[in-house]
Length: 287
Image (cartoon, rainbow, N blue to C red; front, side, top):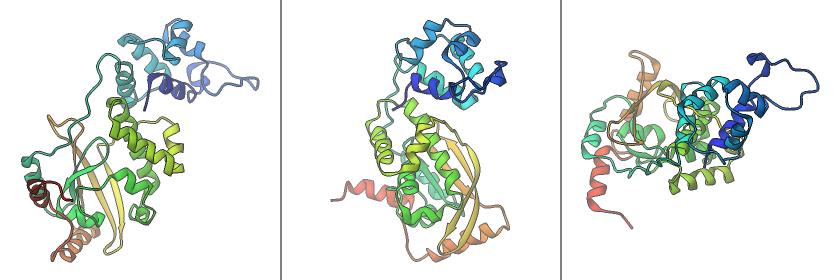
């Protein structure tokens, strides 16, 4: 799904030679840095760097990785991704099981006045409170954010900042592919998105990685209008690949009023709560 060689090539092509002191002229035909330039600036032999980009060199040292990250101008997220890709052959992480503990489901039900859901590394909603179900207008679990965003054309209008959301999703999936390269379900999801969405194909080819822990998230809900919310991502200890997402509104804001209205509209029923998830799991799979 992702590899060290491909990541190095894409990062190298985006470095402006002038930023590392290399003069350019109109005869230069290479976008970004040449392989030998990266090797020279990183303090490694050209042969070794070429073997890295061809996938023939494995287990580069921490010093080499640090030097490459510096030359290629990687940020903290990209640097971590580079290190994970370099160590894939040493230790390959097993895909998480994806089962939510009952204690975490109780925590979801305790979140009042804000949509809250638990997501895995594939961006699948494993559980959500009632307000999250009302926001997305569907039962949770059962929704994959990436499919919802890229493939369900009717739902695209829900995301007020759709283009930015697509960047976040692709960047997240790139990170997940680097951390769990042997996850067949993740590989299948990425393949499906690549086949069915031109925008996903274009963004995936850029090989950008993103790790978003908080930020603005705006929705245009068909019943209550614009909801400008703040998203916080909480990594769950001892639950690999899982995060708790909470979408809150500033006190006294129109978004807070909108969430209250949405909650009142769904008071007589609506999508599954975390308690519904527990009941469904206790009953076993439905046919």
